[in-house]
Each structure stands twice: as C-alpha cells, then as structure tokens.
Amino acid sequence: MLFIVHKIAQWILSRRLDYIENFVLHPLETQERVFKSLLEQGRKSAFGSDYGFGDIMNFADFQRQVPVSSYEQLFPYIDRAFKGESNILWPGKVNWFSKSSGTTNDKSKFIPLTQESLDDCHYRLGQDMLAVYLNNKPESKLFTGKSLSIGGSLSENPNNRSIHFGDVSAVLTENLPRFYELVRTPGKNIALMSSWEEKVVAMAREVMYEDVTSIVGVPTWTQVLIYKIFELLKMEEPNLLKVWPNLELFLHGGVSFDPYREHFHKLIPSDQMTYMDCYNASEGFFALQDDFSRPDLLLMLDYGIFFEFIPVEHLDEDHPRSYTLGEVEMGKNYAMVITTNGGLWRYLIGDTIMFTSLYPFRIKITGRTKHFINAFGEELMVDNAEKAISEACQATGTRVENYTAAPIFFDGGSRGGHEWLIEFDTPPADMKLFGRILDETLKSLNSDYEAKRKGDLALGPPRIHVLPEGTFIRWMKKRGKLGGQHKVPRLANNRDYLEDILRMIAVGS
Image (cartoon, rainbow, N blue to C red):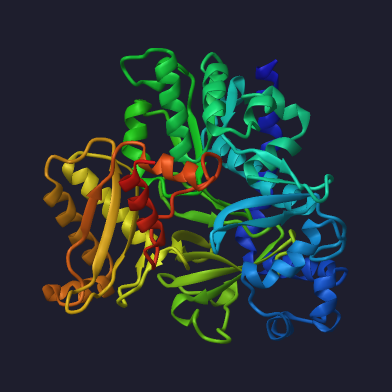
C-alpha cells in the first residue's frame, strides 16, 4: 500500500517543480501578481477600509498609505478577529491562530491562519520541499515508510469555542487531509498532547517500532525524542539507524542547524542521510533549500506573500524606506517585511536576512531585529553567534546543547562585555581555549565587534558560565514554552533572560 502511495506522491509532487521553475525565471512578475491579488482581497476587509485600499493603484500608493507594522500595532485588528469578528484583516472569519514562540513583553503572539495561508503557503512549502527532495534524490524510497512529525498542541479559545489556537505545527497537523495519516507518525491523539513530558514518552513508545524514513521537526526537540527512544530501548550505542534503518531525510527549520550538525551525524552515521533546511515561521513559510550543495535558501515567491526589505541600519528611522525584490543588493543585512494571505499587512516579522544570490533570489537568515546585542555599537547578530559557537566546538571537540548571551553593561569605571550561559553535551577540557576561539571568531566575522574589543577598552573578553545539564529545558518549562516550536532566545540586548536563568539556578527551582 505504501509503495503505491510513494509512486502517486512522486507524480503529484513533480508537478510542483514546473511552478517553482516559473517563478524562478519570472520573480518580479510573480511578486507583482501576488501583490495585486493581496490588494484585491484586502479591499474586502476592515483594515483595507481603514487604510483606503480602494484608492491604492500601485506599490507606491501602498507604501504611502499603509505603515510598516509590528505585532503591537496590528494587535487591535488581530484581537477583533480572535474574538470571532469576520472580515477584519482578511475576508471571512478566521478560525485558526498560531500561538507564536516569539514574545511581546513576554506574552505570546496570536497569528491569524486563514484557509488561503494554510493551503497556498504552509502546505505548499511542505509539498515543494518534498518535490525538490525527490527531484534531487530520484531513487528515494521516502514514502515506503512513514514521516515522523514533531509538533506542538492546540487549545480552544475560552471566549469563542469555534476558534482554536496552538503551535503552527499543531494547526497544520489538525487540518491535514486524512490521506496524510497513512504516511505520518505518531497519530493525532499523541501528536497533539499538551504536556510535553508525557507526549515525548508516548511519542517514543509509538514511533520506535515504525519504519520511519523521514523526520520533520526542530533540531532541539527532535534530539530530546531520539534520546528518549534510546533510553526506552536500553541502547548502549546511540545509533538511530538501528531503530530506523531506512531513515533518509531530516526536514528541519526554526533554528540554525549548524550547532547540531556534527552531533546528528554521530546519531545517524550514514552518508545517505540528507538534512534539508527551510525558513518557516508562524507568519508563513518563506524559503527552502533547493540545492543541497549550498546552505542558502531559495526565496519562494508564489505563496501569497509579498516581500519588502528594510536595511537594518535604517530600522530606527521614523519612516524607513523599504525595497522591493528588484531593488535589493547582495551581502547587505535587511529586516524582512511581509504582506500575506493571512491578513498581515506590511508586517515587520523580526527576522534579518542577507541575499546570497540574485536571479534566483537566495537568502540566508542572519538574526532577529530583537535577538541581537548592540549595547556598545557591536551589532552582534545571531548568525555571528552561531558560527562562532560552531567554530569553538569544532576546535575543542565538544558540542553545545543550548546557549543564550546578553550584555554586561558599564558599571562605574568597569568596561562592558558579553556574558554567555552555555549548556554543553560535554564541557571542553580547556574552557579558556573555547572562550578565546569564540572571541576570535566573532572578531573575524564582525568588524564592529572587533573594533569594540580592540585593546579591551570598550568590551572585555566573553564571560562564560557552564550551566548544569537540563537547565534550559527547566527554564523553558518554567516559562510555559516547552516543546513544539519554542526556541531558546540566543541573544538579547538586555539581561532579562540571563538574569532569570541565573536566579532559577540560584534557588534550585
């Protein structure tokens, strides 16, 4: 049965390659078509009425009349839709909301998921990733086994029982056609469990006896599940191929895979294993790895999302100019602005990207507009931190489980610096060497950091704390952000996260 499913899926997915080729060849025309379609739908909404969509004839009008918005600025409209009102940000009623792992004043964000955004964006990226994979791996036997999907949970809006919210992965799982239940594991009754601790045990017990050929999930929580399987099977040697000999693909996204890559190679010792990256978020799916010989991602232009880009150095201006796809440059940091078929209008998603290729448009994620450290003009981005951590690990033969970093502010005559909280798989034998390589790599990657570190005058060397095993999981649980799509914030421009973790350790909670 699954072999027949495999052949049918290969044929269906091959049709998507034609669409991908079309927007790769005609990117600007594709985005213009998406823009006009979004504008037409937006005219039927309360937001469109408030901002005069009926008078907008082109993108220049759109820029003048519609401001770039944060979540806080769109919240009054989102809140109305969340309470059950129709035609607020998008025509019709929105019954599904993604509870974002991003925070606003430490509160969750609720991102509307329309039927169009589910069908034409979220599910389409999944189809396209598989289409690209099968095109690269024509001998694949992917659908002769099952796909392990690691996701979150759902909740009911207590004020309107027809509206549900949860991790975007859980919303997608709940809305999948029944056909997909034939090729995925675990079943919905386990996949949507709310307690992460109970769910990871239940998942492990069910999936460890399946023929799993692919995994979809965030590296952090996937790793937790794998070790739970090893524990239940009482395996002395951590080799996942002894559990799933036909495993061939790991579809991952949400966090950089670089700090996890070497460890996954040890857990899955196979030259046939493929690790495929994508750029996914609650607000939409934006890019995928189409060429396995390079790490950057192809920007997907026909998902009902219109893209704009603001140079990072202009973000703090009152009215920063945004650039369309035809105006961007390679090698420059941009904050990404999206207008979507989920009803997000000129929404500043909070990610920063850099173009690595034009025609086709390929990008790499460089960090977050809020997850960075710039207390002293050093402009340290997540991309810098990930590469430096990876370099220090490789040089000292260790692996980092999780980390976060924050500034050490000037205190009287003392200099500033960066404080790192790091949880290792096994701490390096020489912590001073690890810290030195981390520091030197950051200098080589970031000229602003290098300038501030020169002579130790403005910034001192990194101050590193080695955390006990399981610290970050306990901290995430304490914050109600355990499992699913939740991620440890890597960098912060204040000390709130760092101090909270240190307090937790001090009291032993």
